[in-house]
Amino acid sequence: MTDVSAEALHELTAAGIARHEARWLVDEFLPGGDPDAKVLLQAAADRRLRGEPLQYILGHWPFRTLDLEVDERVLIPRPETEELVGFALSELARARVTAPLIMDLGCGSGAIGLALLSELADRGVVATLVAVDESLDALAVARSNALKHRLRAVSFVHSSWYDNVDVSLRGRVDLLVANPPYVGRNALAQLDPVLAHEPLGALVSSDHEGVEGFADLAQVIGGAREWLAPTGVLLCEHGDTQREAVLRAATRAGFVHADDYDDMAGKPRVLIARQS
Image 1 (cartoon, rainbow, N blue to C red):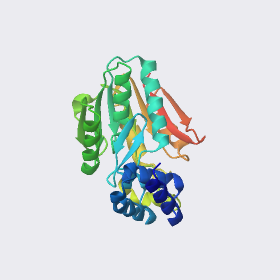
Image 2 (image 1 turned 180 degrees about the vertical axis):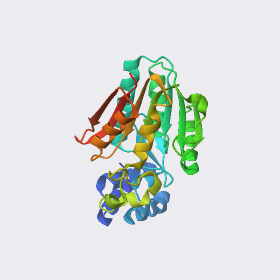
Image 3 (image 1 turned 90 degrees about the vertical axis):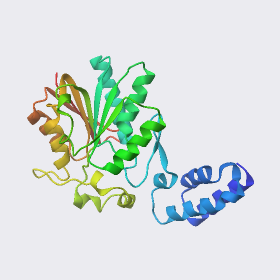
Image 4 (image 1 turned 90 degrees about the horizontal axis):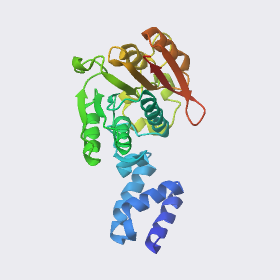
């Protein structure tokens, strides 16, 4: 680290920015310790001190093997969602599908679906992705990330869940993945204040049948079998109080097998529902 960078790091931490975040900012906005870039660094630091998420300030964030563009139009990719991708890869390996068709419902930045395309390609598997979101802003970010990583086997669909998805895909999807909104309105106020900067529609869902924040999950799970191939699999991320509800919804929807898995923090997080 140059003297200029070390000095800048000290100034940011003294101002109240956590050291690991200050290091990210210095590396991003003061490359090589260029003194002329200090004005950009100070502007970024001011944004962080006002509470804006570090990821939005940087404009990109790592997700598994990808460096994704992120801003206020999309959710910040999180480690729990990286785990969902790992589960999905294991399911595809188990099913031995040679050229899987994947649908990413509520794709946001494209994190889940694009990571799957990329990592499957590294394994010699050519997959096709249908990325669905009701937000045109989110789809624009996902498209940009696909271009950035030269992932071309993907189509983008503007749709609220299944509403506008091409009917020709019914019964053909090998893997359906979703990280839908699952935070209840009452619970949101008690969570990390940084969430106030993220798109509310991608976070908060209405209550359903007495389960807080479950309406979108119920819709995704309830409609999935119509789109899945006979050996297809559904994976959903969900809230840590929703395990019983997702398993009940999967059983009601007619899935033959439904299991729910903890994340690395030991909290219920990923539903895996199988057709066979």
